[in-house]
Image 1 (cartoon, helix red, strand yellow):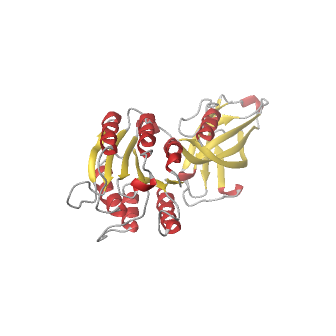
Image 2: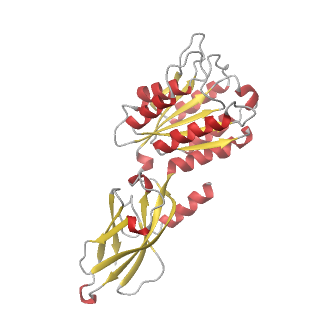
Image 3: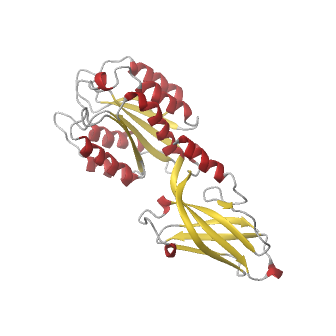
Length: 320
């Protein structure tokens, strides 16, 4: 998974004179009156479109003598725009007693610690564990408030690694809903907001008060993307397929992801995949050909306008 991410990043480094978020990558050789480029268009900019045909792509230029034509596209991933400057991420951490059986060697801790170390130093981080480790019930404990440094979060993870398990169940939906409202709702509007939730089970609590619908509503209202790391299988999680399907629904509805592994020894790779999800977003590489119809008025640069169906229009600059 990481190798795929590096491949797309290497491709994107072919950028030539274009807006940073929406890149045009020159392809092959070109004559004096012809150019071919791949333009990155993030799928989140046209969320209601899936598997479009070529007629869904609308392309034009700002130069009357340059004609643009979409000749194909392929799905892929590209680095998220400005991610390193605008990341707010809350880690929601399962401390339920079932982990004594599913991860007795506590491999989850070095795995998530590696993720935290790989995040940019400018990221605003927070950490909660669910349910409370105290004697009385609470949905979660705030271990590190939003805006904490990597060092603070790493210190709290080290403390949790030596702490007892919670005896209050696994309140996934209570924790997601209320922690989002407490920790992410007031983050600056220009930041990408994420939750990375690790669990080895399903929503289990004596008197559940909130549902997955409440969690989804809170996430969508505050533009929070949900990423789940799920440890387990049919033997360790009752109704496993239903649980995974629910998590996938929440993740896809918010632009996040689910990374599922059966064994704890695969958690380091799983959290590496989480980093890929944070760094790269699904996109279309749209293959566009540009034709100069009047060689006597050859431009130095052309603005290409690209839109997918009813999605946002994006503009890139292509040097002629």
